[in-house]
Length: 637
Image (cartoon, rainbow, N blue to C red; front, side, top):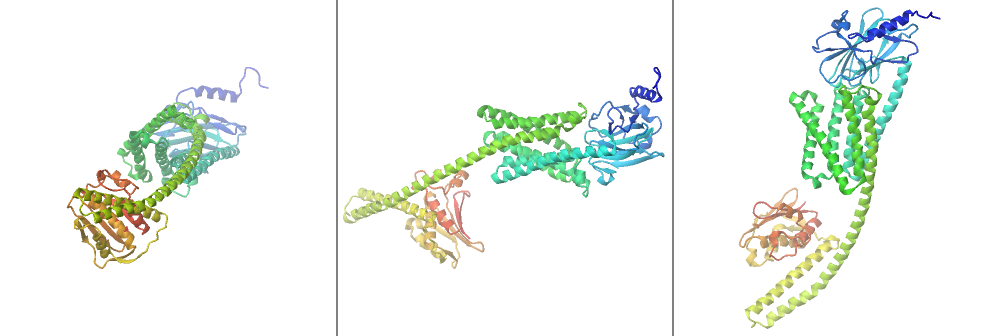
């Protein structure tokens, strides 16, 4: 037993260490013993900033330099962002019976350049050159951290230098071998579980997005994939996974993840909030931001293209990405107030979580918060909680999409049944119109023949009766033939036919007064094609009738024919008023008539009927408004 009032040599050393611990410019020596599986260097590291970036290890390790220039760091706290070389120093003093072999682990894993000098028992220093941008094979102990073996002895000195463009987030621990292996096993298990959840989420939302053709879920899968790449990089796993590849790939993948994630989340907000319909100006802002993110991808793949001006561009993109997120959150609240849809609030809460995690991570990188188990892992935890909350919201969306799909199928079935009923009714009605119209036409014709002494006014009225009856009869014929073509009830009778003869025969059916306006500019005399001459004559006659009806009086209607290896093209061009783009999109819809048709006869079925005939031949019918007039082209492949 030690007498009261006396201190052992060990206790005096500890008191001296405690006194030196508080002196500026001095680092306390570390006491190691066999019962310590892990010793944190928090509060024990001395630090020096080389603003010249020119000092070598020989300069730093000069006698007295550390005591005069190094200052003790009270905790593991980021030193912010700069381009200087940061030196760290610690002295090791093991207690008796302490195992001589330890492991020094330095983080964080994303530090680009970490140079370590460890004093050897017989004098001199062993240098280790490690870092995120350096070959993975340089690491003596190949883990995700910068880990190396250390032989401890009284007064052993350890120096290490860090140079990085990331936050200067440096922490270090001394481990006994078994304890380090057990700790890394646990850490890798939990982090592997975390990355496994992210991978499952990426696969799930990719499949759902493709299966449902839902851009929101597909874009969210891209966002999760970006988080996966980013966290693989910041946690030091990319160099482990890509040991056979260059540092270029390990640095490029997180950049691609950042840009791809930003683009994906902008696209997700765009579709989720339906900005194109509800907020047109914000929609254009989001599209602009999306294009800017995609424009940076080549620079992420080829970093040698990066110039100082590009960094300003990157800052602009960052500002726009953050602005878009803020706008999206505000719009979510606005939409929720109007609709009270609970999934909107779930989306809002889901993105508040990673924003809070990112704020803590930023504060830690700036040195406002110390580095510990909570602040160091909060961003990853926030990402996981965000995915779980967002998955619940997207589940509600999936259920709503299924309800909408069932409702759409039911509505389509009802609409199809009603359409069939209406078609049958109109077909029956049209068929019943045929006989009365023929009777009216015959009666009017008999009156004209048997009473030639009628006054001109009465004869004109009879002509109007016959003309209107003929118009209605053509309408009925077109409708019935369209129905027959649509249901496959009218078979084509195709065969080789001379195109010039087909055009001449069709024009000959027109009145002589209007037939003279039709001009055939191009048509090879011997050109023939495999088609149904009767139906194709009807199709051409309908197009000629439209061109003559909507052109100014006496203006020509030009017909041209091109026959080549691709097929047959028959173009009919008039000098009428043409059509707008919106009218061209609706052209061919049954009963649609353009504004230029006001005051002119027509049913709106002629073009539709012509297109049915052309498509039955396997061709296409295209209308173009080229300057004055309209050009319609029949193409048969």
